[in-house]
Length: 357
Image (cartoon, rainbow, N blue to C red):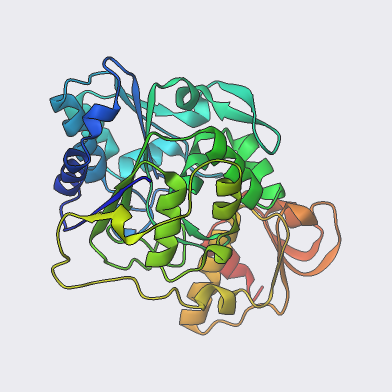
């Protein structure tokens, strides 16, 4: 059974280096192997917002690899629909890390793709992810307004072209995420759980836990992430589907956990609140994209804070394309609504303006 290494602290660089050293990560990598690091740069939100992987995780990983004589290292990522990867890279300080260690950064939105047969269907995956000898996944453990949680398995979605990401959403996310994880298996996963947001993928409400994890089984990592966040596996269906399709095991026994130190203040995750469920009580969603839905949830959150009334009916998602509907439509897919907020995706600010329009 795979092991999960756990460490507490505030220095992402030192924590990452210590995790890799404790796990003897260098012994897992073939001599002369090409290595790709896949962080979470879903949007231009800062790591402190709970949205993206801290640059110290990246630098700690690179420094460990270079000190162990690995030189063919690159960073790969493709931000979510509607976001610019390079803008997110600069906002998170990755440009400085790559410059310091002389490591190239590849925007997967510009990468070539190949069609691969998966357990679900043929799927387009970016070549930089497919062709590396050793893929290291660097996700953030955080909440998600559609899948309840995002961590190791869902972070691989950044290895897809935008047209494939859209298809994932039209299929409801769960099975496509599981199928991708069963095919594109990272050799190592290092989780940034320092201050992930418990509710939103785009951040904004971070919870400081000062924790990081390392493991070789992304399914096991996600199962443990559920436990830390107070979720059941049934709350995140793609994890069990991924296990069924051979991506890994959901079993996490006490002996599988290797704690490198103790948290200074004993901080742990509290159960995720029912905030998203309450905010979206008037929302009808069908095959909605994360970027669009997160913008809506953010707008609803702001409206709730500011005492702004919201429409009694809101529709969102590709499932409403070409259909007539009453209420407020969110995004270009919902032009058939009585009123709609244009954009793909629209911003939270634009949505907020239209609540009382």
